[in-house]
Length: 524
Image (cartoon, rainbow, N blue to C red; front, top):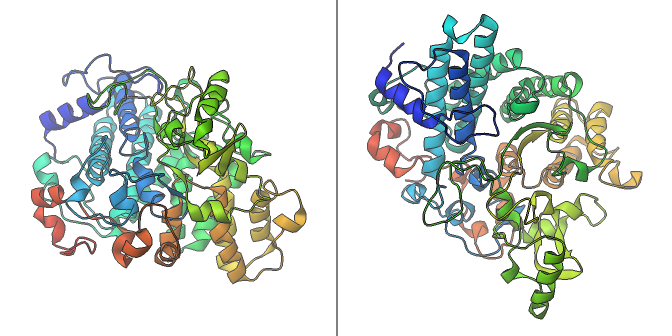
């Protein structure tokens, strides 16, 4: 395979992190190019480096992927104008704005970080294959499976965000990469499915201890199921979803609230969570003291936490609210930039027990200005200070899979007993009375429309909504019929907004990216 050893080795060294566990990602040393991949430990460290990039603000660390998968839909919106999320959520994005980075978040940052991971994954796979110094064949297969899962995950995100894009699975030089054109989405997904199936075949059922943040074989399976559903391959989507339901160690929890218990972040329903830890930082921006942009502390909860200067509704009670919070060791010291949208708050069923974690408009007896989503809150000052949270980032959970299986079965055979059983398993824990949760008797179309809402209530702000609306073909209709607090996405949205533009800087560096599509996904 083609390679530029000096460039590749230096690249992966500086994007990898030497550590003993997924929770300790403070760089302790840099691996020499002469010794890298000379042992199993070297290869494991390189894999951990890929996980570290996944936790950057541009992907899972703050709200990087939230911008693409949730903002501009019908679940969350900011409580004020916010420059760094507005272009995407307000559908005013263009090629030039895609390059604008605020707090290490932009379309360009996400593009670069996803491809940084892919470059590293290609190198790891190449260097581990046949390398007996790394360990036994079983060890090498395990490492390659990890790398192929992460590579598949990144290409899945890339196709979701940009569709056709550069695609390569070999070790290429920087010059060779800079001359790649766009590969069609179907071809990329074919390779992605091969990566994910290899990962499912060779990763473990689950990981514990220091490896708790690793993706298991079932994380690979759920991405495969999502790809099949997007392709409307309903039988394959159903089969993969049922593999997870019937063969994985995961189980639905008795109540919705238990899923989001901050003291049980590896509960049986969660298929994959990225782990974070307090006070572990590797890069700081002087413009934002105390905030880590490439470390292992999570500041996504601060985006959902309220800020006291916005609350409560009766401003004369602000001091009393502050005192009540302090007495509990809590604070409204977040940004409040992710709150429930007007439409979501107005339509969430009042008798749905999931409402209390998704719509909080009164706290400690104080009426609030905005409806917040407490499922992602962490208000505790001592345990979880502002922009320095240890909360995991949930990526996939079994509740999602049950709804996926229900949808696939309905599309194949209508609202059969099987489809209803999967749907009812989720709805039973949301309502006290059978009359409320039982949807027996609906038509296939009625079941499909019920699913539109059920996924909204169950998976709110878990980074699925725009993906769902796009694959259902209803994003434009949904957004055009909404009202927002500060923005006008309902006015601005166009049919081409189902994809993002490739950033202008990338186009200037590589004009071949425009050869197959001179419109750049409709933005020209």
